[in-house]
Image (cartoon, rainbow, N blue to C red; front, side, top):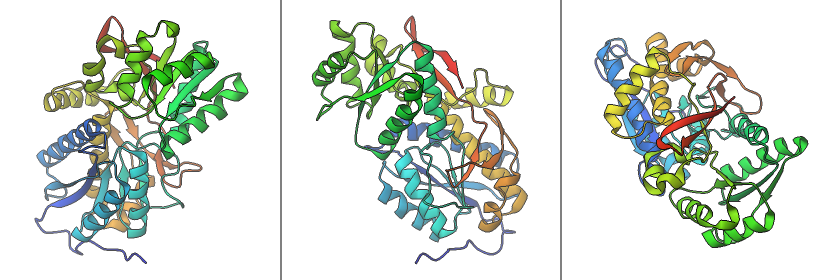
Length: 369
């Protein structure tokens, strides 16, 4: 049995208020996404402290690298709970976030998930967990609608073994089938580029969706499909967002353009989003991703909750319904979403975007959900 670990009873000292921050900062985690997530959180902490902190106390991050390992995330949650953090924030990988959320629920530790979308983030309904990004079923249905609107009916997928990828295939299949679309999983034992190309030709599909890791095997598969004369005109898609990051463009150049993916940004940022975006570009020094905005918004929400309700964990968990915070991508409010078990920001923006073939450093908005 897991025993709830409470923070120090008093919150009127000058001691820092600490938030535990989970992010994949080393391989095999998607470390580029983790770096962007952490940059957003760190910028928000800096701004909170510049405006008085939490009732005069400085805000600090206690950062732990999950490296895309659920067991490592669980151990980090236990450690951070013992250290007395007021709340948990972060994580990018859905399976890792699910493990962290389940442990946070057992520990009685508030967790605001920044970037993971798997619908069932916990096994049971919980008051301890809230989430910023839209659920996977919402975003991936929007992606499926984009494919249908573009005239695609036969969609092939190459998927790595993972609960996240398997769930994505089920969402696409159930949404496309009643609308005349078909999803076929390419029967390849290993996602070697040549075998993927051969299987794609056999299936006579007009779309190949990459539900695999980046850079391997995604990058060599893209190169092979682009160079195969049998596959001219086949659309390559990556709904999970691999092309969002600078390493995609650096690895593939023009081959990485025109690969549609899901992005959780509005078409136009407001004044706050524009200001934060400028500051994040200065910190990151490369292409700015929606993940960095998610990191910033996570800390902005938690800071407002801690200022309003103090650092008591139970009070934080009881405050999700009353949250109304101006985030970089819109006004953030939480509601109880069906079939997720957690508090959910239902208004998160969703786009289908790609890199412009004429200028791979520029993004084109193809579809808005």
